[in-house]
Amino acid sequence: MHYDSRTIALHWTTAGLVLILWTIGQTADFIPRGPFRGAYWSAHFLLGFIFVAVLLTRILWRSSGGKRLPPADSGALQVISKTTHYLLYALLVIVAALGLANAFAHGVSIFGIINLPKLADHARAESIGDLHELAANSVLALAAFHAAAALAHHYLWRDKVLERMLPERAS
Ligand code: HEM
Ligand code: HEM
Image 1: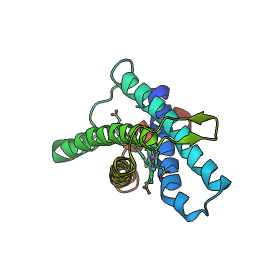
Image 2: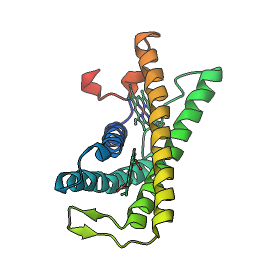
Image 3: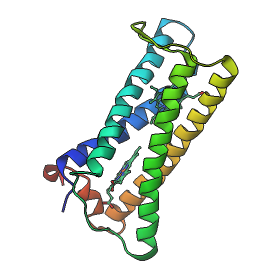
Image 4: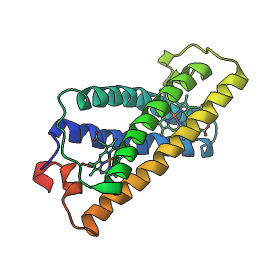
């Protein structure tokens, strides 16, 4: 029993983008000021806009044609799993919205080609940036818990929950 291929592709694209965006965001300040750092941040902004599009597509697909599978757990575990999934979606929407707000608050440039207007003063932009970082770290923490649960299903309980989210050929 597997999710449909579009759901699977959207899940892993989201996961990959979250990991890359978080890594860029947390490491950019270690790079000396200059063109490379500018390009590094530009990659975050560009991938950020792609992430917003992927997330919207995922939510639309999930609520329309995406395949639904019966709950993998029962009792308390089912509640924890469902709550984690809803919280993940909520945090993904929050981090994306704060990312967009952050980009317009700072008036960022994307590779010098697209220059967004700066819509907030310095103090407001800083506080939106802090909230964006807090949301980003929360997504990472919850996703780590979620991934640990998926791996526990696979390696400890040896059931087929992880395989539901893997392409049919690979499992
Ligand atoms: C899963 C999605 C995302 C994650 C995990 C993430 C993560 C981060 C992190 C960790 C930082 C560094 C915060 C700091 O040190 O102050 C950051 C900064 C930033 N992010 Fe994101 N981000 C995501 C999505 C987005 C999106 C969608 C946009 C908008 C297109 C965006 C725009 C920005 C901007 C403008 C900054 C501040 C850049 C600067 O200080 O010059 N992010 N992000
Ligand atoms: C940033 C990383 C990740 C995010 C944001 C994320 C998000 C999500 C969300 C929101 C769902 C619920 C899907 C739905 O019912 O609509 C889900 C399902 C799932 N995820 Fe992740 N995920 C991430 C990483 C991972 C990793 C690393 C693994 C495996 C090690 C994994 C394994 C699974 C599995 C197996 C399911 C299906 C669970 C079931 O059928 O009950 N995810 N993920």
